[in-house]
Length: 220
Length: 347
Image (cartoon, rainbow over all chains, first blue to last red; front, side, top):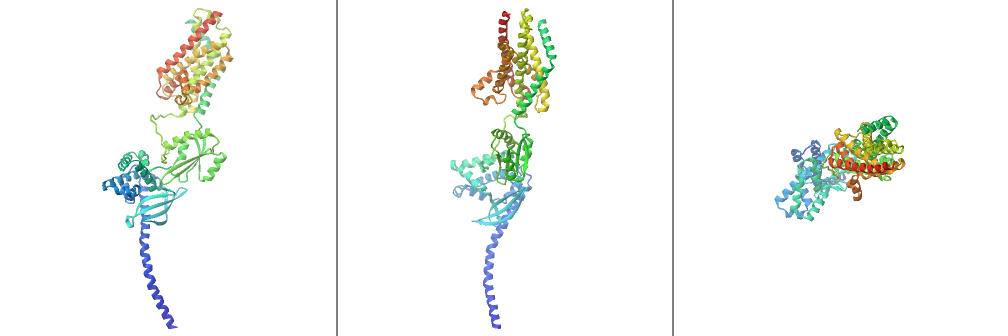
């Protein structure tokens, strides 16, 4: 009887010694994904807080700077243009393109996001990996309406940044990509950039939303 | 001159001794300005439903402020659709706003194209100019913004039409009646009698018709909510010129048609045709070429143009308008004088 108990204890000890490292390894693999997901959701929350607290009447450079910390415009620009076209550009052109894209996005979406998110409640639902990105699924309750928003977040840890937003079949990056590719097919990068810069030069908020919609696209 | 004044005195006495005729003239003018004007300027209480679950846009408020819609706000889309199907509302706006786009779907019941047309008129203005909380891919802009409504815009045309109606009715009935009764026989056979009769009659009818029109405009402006403008001397001048022109044309028609029955029928039919063909309801620029030619050849178009200028302050070709009206007046008087001289010879 004593021998049986001793043998049982040894077997349990060996099993534990074998299983625990495996569990630890698994946890170590999962932790970054969890952290990334949490950081993705954190980035979403911070962006929403920034645009909600903005007064919304006029463009505010400090608000734009803060919001830009949580949006990866570089990645957005690269994906919208396509890697083939992106790789043909020099650093200066890439910088100009991203900077213009950022201005158009600020003009087009920040006032809208302020209008919507300042009155909405955002709840975190789940996270899923999509290649190197994380899809942060949230529910937005606005009045009596609930919409499912999926935020595409790239990067890890404190560098998690938003690169797109989708509601149903409507995806910001897909719409932007379609628009730019359409324009690029009819002309070249220089014309595309000149067109974007002319739209971005609109000063008043009223005309800015109209003008940037020409580039980024409008609802159908 | 004495003859003219005597005839004027007689006509004005007769006019004041027939209060029923005076009241019915004003009533006719009031009805035309109110009912025709309100109908032409479109519906003002279209039952309209709004389903806006997000509650971010203020579309309900903007639609109500447009004073064309009677707005009902719904919390349940199915209830709104069933109300639309049974006719409690004639159209429904389903508003959707999210972080990427705004959309407004307008659903109508479908059996009444006139209602659809009326809805479009009011909705376009609200969605593109008033509802700034919605960002929609549809924009309107105005080169020369004005601050008057469609009701204000319709009224000058109706005033021109009333100049025609009041002048021709007043002139036609009294002239044909007195000519038939040979009331003017002694006057006309006297030296310069015919010219005196024509001058006196056109003067009294011009004053009578203009007075009725001004009273009707003053009575209906506050109740129907249209503006008379700030150019009262211009309004007086335009009314007198228009009424005088139509009086002279009426005189020519009365001399030609001779009997009250035929005169009334002809003047009524011509009046309706003139109203539709003179750009009062539909802009002349939107008409076929042949209609545009007809409109610009007729005096009511120029009278309406002058009335719009003085009542609304919009650009108007006053000199051209007055010259055309005077030309028609001269033509009418000449024609009438020729016919009357021939009949005088037969007396």
